Image 1 (tube, rainbow, N blue to C red):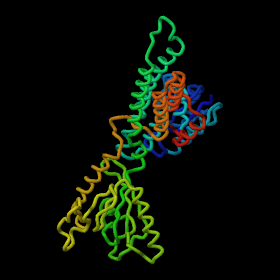
Image 2: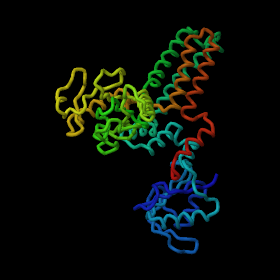
Image 3: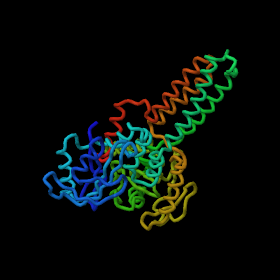
Image 4: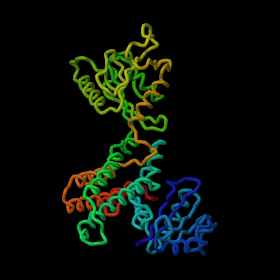
Length: 426
């Protein structure tokens, strides 16, 4: 296997740049730059030199002998001064050494996976952690990166292995004196209980909802205050505000982080009863499509909203004649003076809490959820089967589905797709 190197601390310039070297020639290459290697896991100051003896940098050097390293192979870290020229010079020196090459995206993490240092769920969690932008994204990704999903799947696998062993014993050794006969109903009942446990996790909101954001759509007739309100919620001017009806002709989406949660706020064209303007008609169609895809709708119209996922807002409450909160509305707000904006976010946050996954339990991504659901379906089918041969086969297929969650039997192509999304130094 080739020895790879890359900066893992982000692109320079920076105060410090951490350059990692991993593979069979890692220590030889590092010694060529720094001279005698320090004891394992002890940071030591070294002068890095070219083959001609010119000083490249004064750097901290750490070595991690495999297999007890992040990648499972010999790994060295050079903590350089983070200027572009320094990093480029050290990389150039390494690139000119035999058997070394620059790492590909995600290659360090991929080697950790192949060496058994992490499993596929932990690698996916690390990928999510690298891209996390909100507190909820970070917490869910950290749970996966630290093995939370893996431990839950291992629990399911252990229970299913026990059931599979009981089924096989009844098939192969039920007539032996040292194997107690067992009612098939006991095995299938246990399979049904395991299927229910898996279904409860599968039914929970997926981790993608944390990453993609909760979609909040502002809707209502023309000139009902949607654009003014979205500017107030976003705390910046994202939509043009005008007293002219129909100013907003297309939907405007703005990502917002509030309370550690990612939101996508959408301003829409006014929902006029009828129009002869083809551009306005397109805007209305897009507004209706946005409402159909919304998680929460802030309805600013005077008529009762017809959708269940709406909050009926009394907007422009600072204007003459609109001081009183009409019956049916949940809140009066005024984007002009800020009245009710804090309370509106509280209502949105409360509704959002019912849409997001619980962070005190494991959260599955789409791939993991589909495989877990496949296992649950197989267990349910096994619980209704009367032939123990069929039951045993369903158990075997269910175990294979769980193995694919942790990557024990996944394909090279899938791994290429996953690690291609990582940055170079990971």
